[in-house]
Image 1 (cartoon, helix red, strand yellow):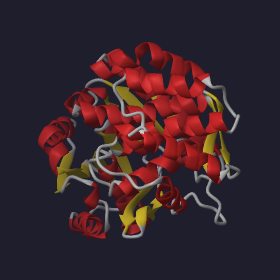
Image 2 (cartoon, rainbow, N blue to C red):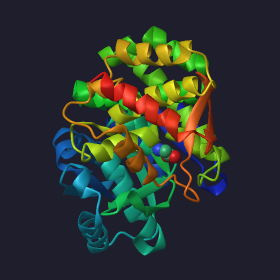
Image 3 (cartoon, rainbow, N blue to C red):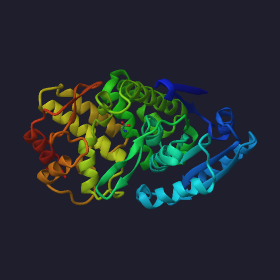
Image 4 (spheres, rainbow, N blue to C red):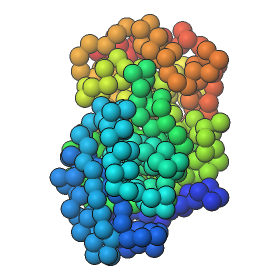
Amino acid sequence: MMETVHVDLADRSYDIHIGQGLLGRAGEFLAPMLSRPRVAILTDENVAALHLETLQTALAKDGIESVALTLPAGESTKAWPQFTRAVEWLLDQKVERNDIVVALGGGVIGDLAGFAAAVLRRGVRFVQIPTSLLAQVDSSVGGKTGINAPHGKNLIGAFHQPSLVLCDVDVLGTLTPRDFLAGCGEVVKYGMLGDASFFEWLEENGSAMADGDIGARIHAVKRSCEMKADIVARDETEQGDRALLNLGHTFCHALEAATGYSDRLLHGEGVAIGCALAFETSMRLGLCSQEDPSRVRALLKSMGMKTDLADIDGDLPDADALLDLMGQDKKVVDGKLRFIMARSIGDAFVTSDVDRSVVHAVLSDGLVQR
Ligand code: GLY
């Protein structure tokens, strides 16, 4: 079974294929796109050990020669030194303007490889083969590419859409339960921001999906990609609606900064906690019903996800310090922090009009429960 989601962006349109065994069929999908039978793959050490041979064998089966550069795993790879190494390696490999770069990995590799493709010879095509749930439902789709600066995450980059995304749900079976559940934070986010019936579906099927049900995983990845594709088609460069995808992220970025971007808090875990805090704030502002934040927290908990500030191990700074960290978020416009708030589950909106004292109270109450 294979599902396809089309991202409709005029001459930058592309397909996202979602299904089982797609890694082993990669040659079949790539061959018609190539002007010569050769690709350059960027990956990381962890992913290479698990999946690189399968990919290269699949490409060879369709007569495609491949070369691969394996970078260190981890967020610190997403910075100038490994980026420079990757771009210069692509030039060493004589990757030409009409060739394709393949990103095989999670969000770090996808973002770095996409940015490398964006600047190499002023832009070459690239194909995303995302291997984490988070990358399959979020970072591989929509063309945000880039690396981190000492000043903050994702501050250097470009919009550069992939030419194809292959989401093989079988590779999700190689993730640790913690990494898989972190990716679920982004999946649940789509229901909360724009599709109440998907949220209800997750209330019914979220646990089965987390436990490994393949049909449920395909549906969850497909529905997430559909929602992202729809938003990106409306607002490719985040002038408006695309900011909805940042539901929970203003809280999340402050929590990630407070925990030193370490494995105390994975990004998707911060998104889940951030979404719960966003709904709590929306409720206290009188925007949504009292029931909504409880439903959000109940779903996250039923899937085994982190839900509250109390679920973060170790010390956290106080509410004032967390609010200051939120102020450094790159979504600050004209000095005003933009929040994604909700009128109900499935109906989020962007606003700069959020009373700081309400956010302070939500954070203080959450910290007291720790
Ligand atoms: N991850 C948010 C976006 O792609 O806009």
